[in-house]
Length: 95
Length: 218
Image (cartoon, rainbow over all chains, first blue to last red; front, side):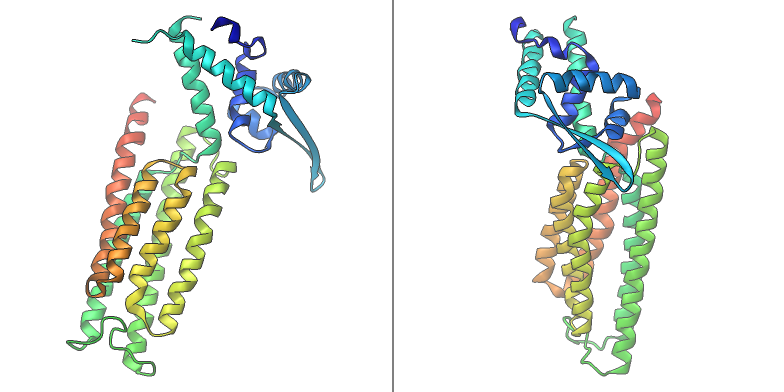
């Protein structure tokens, strides 16, 4: 089971980001920040890492005059998240 | 990570998935207030109906053909009564839910709240127009079952965006509404059960389950 644990999700923030994204369509930066309770810089670096892995897709657009960046999970990302969660569950001894 | 840490991490992940999709700040007390207001409104309506209704009058129309002055007066009283109940219940709901959100530090008007509102307001708005049409065509007896049915449908379908109890509340309203449709003599009583007693019951249940506990731990 241990081999299914995903290095990308060793960070609690990254795992949290994926948890939110797999159950929502397009979540913006501010909403993620609010849900996860992290700083802008911290969130941005973790999102960049997930983007490099092609786990999340990014959409930049303008809402009125303000730029708005939203994210959603890719199919690869959602699958990786599920496998990782199952691996964690598998590590918990059953009573 | 120890197994205990992993359990905690799984709980955190589930909490995040829940919190990001559902509106969980809904206060049970808003249900209790709405229920009390509804019972008072139903009692008032019952008083006015028995006052101005001749014995043996048609329960579907409350004896109102169009054009009878006194009957129109009764209808206006009933509409004003219903509107007052709606406004007071909504004020109570917003106040207690706002207070709870404020205490727990959750944002009240986030994406999950908007999604819940949209899914509630569409069926409720149509239900409101439908009920006004029933008054307009002189069929006030059908208004009580119609409001139960539309409200039940709104709650039932919007429940996936909020607390699970709302699904049961919606289903119960639907059962009462459907029965009341075929038992118009007792429709006002069913309305009082649905909007009064059920609100107090489920509101109290939600309060005991989610709010009292969190107050102790805070």
